[in-house]
Amino acid sequence: MPKIATWNVNGLRAVLAKDALTWIHDFDIIGLQESKLSFNLEDNLLGYQAYYSLAQKKGYSGVVVLTKQLPREIENCFSTTNYKDNEGRILKLNYENFLLYNIYFPNGKKDSLRLAFKLDFYRHFLEEMQNVLKNQQKVIVMGDFNTAHQPIDLARPKENESVSGFLPQERQLIDEIIKLGFIDCFRHFTSEPNWYTWWHLRTGARKRNSGWRIDYLMVSQALTSQLENSTIHNNILGSDHCPVSISLTI
Image (tube, rainbow, N blue to C red; front, side):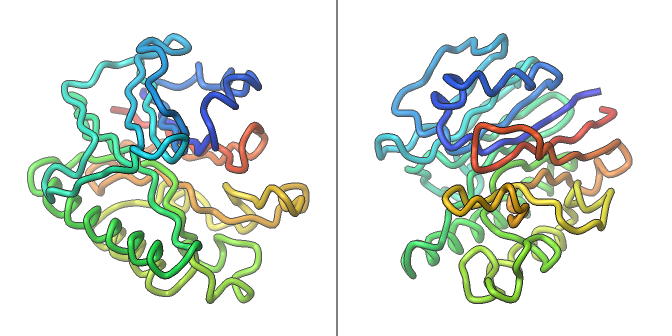
């Protein structure tokens, strides 16, 4: 029964220095985002095989996958759309029983150019999903989506209606992912409010639980019957995000 987790670490070396990854050993595959690495660390990291995708810009973005089971193939691109990723946002791992993506979706808050970049990235992602689902029915997507889907997914929806991360056109892109047949794993099991995965560091928002749910694990329709649970681990510290996990009976 594979257990899979995702976490935006806001700097991998920082969380390693804090000894904040001790919890991962219960999991078979861990996807990390915003690693901020300028070079690969060890191939064997914390007892896992490690795969890296780095940004060209030093100390920026980046994703890492730690895995006990070796994939058959690894790519750091959307291979079906010819999308060139210079920001270390994509790792695609082809396992025997499923295809897994670890993705750090762009943040669009800086300015209109970055919002346009984010929306374009989502469109390439959607095209990639449409293409791969034609041949591979069992697909898992995990990562920081930088978008809260519904009002229940952030503490102050009214105040953030015009803020990137909760704009109508961003939320519609999550709708489109779900229309393709993907399941938002956490919402598959609970409709409870007040579950978030990111909190603003400088305002003490985490203590007040004034956050956003922007980190997701999604599975394609073919995996729904094998999905056992999904958990937000809001007790795990070390980043401005917290991990999300699922268990599958593959």
